[in-house]
Amino acid sequence: MSDPRHIGPVRVALVGATGLVGRKVIEIASAGDEVRIVGIARREAPLPPGARMEMFVSEPDKWGEVLDAVRPRALICALGTTWKKAGRDEAAFRAVDQELVIATAEAAKRAGVPNMVVVSAAGADKRAKALYMRVKGETEEALTRVGFKRLDILHPGLLRGERVDDLRFAERAALLAAPLIDPLLSGKWERYRSIDAAVVAEAALGLALRRAGGRFTHDNEAMRRAAREWRRVGEPGEVA
Image (cartoon, rainbow, N blue to C red; front, side, top):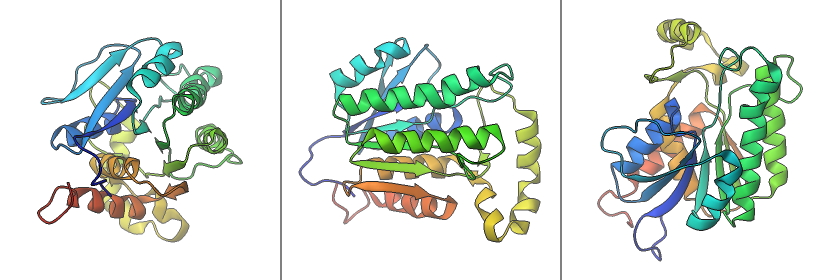
């Protein structure tokens, strides 16, 4: 996974640093020396304790200039909002979950970034009746056309973890019920089982460093495998 020709940590850009997965990416990367996170955000926000990273704050139309300046090895995109935060307005929802994601991807491609890892959702489908899943599916299709050397799309089920200043009561209720519901989800429904946000973050970091080209979609189990590979980086006997 790691490149023996590389000296020092690999720079990986992160957008969506204030969300559940984004914060976990920062925490995990900061605990080791394999990756140095370059965060790009619209506004300043508290970082996780012990964060070791660079943070650039600018308007989204300037993010391309940041990417061009820092030239990261990969882009991890954990951007996303909720129907409630978007004021239950489709245009506002698409502005974040679709338009900003695609615009950031295009800016990264222009800056020469070869890899992108995007956190999407289990059930994403451009033909879905539900707006959330349809937008996610449409966005995935658009990202495929951007032309990265490698594109990894993560399809987590219900994310487990503590959010900061982001109360989601329906999600909280689902998390409380997850230990009882998860075993009942089988077959095509298994992909909706809950997964720890830290596992998703570990998978994102590991996949960001891979060099084989292509487009790959990862369900919960595939992310767990990628996360286990990430944890082996830096262990005795591994190439650092």
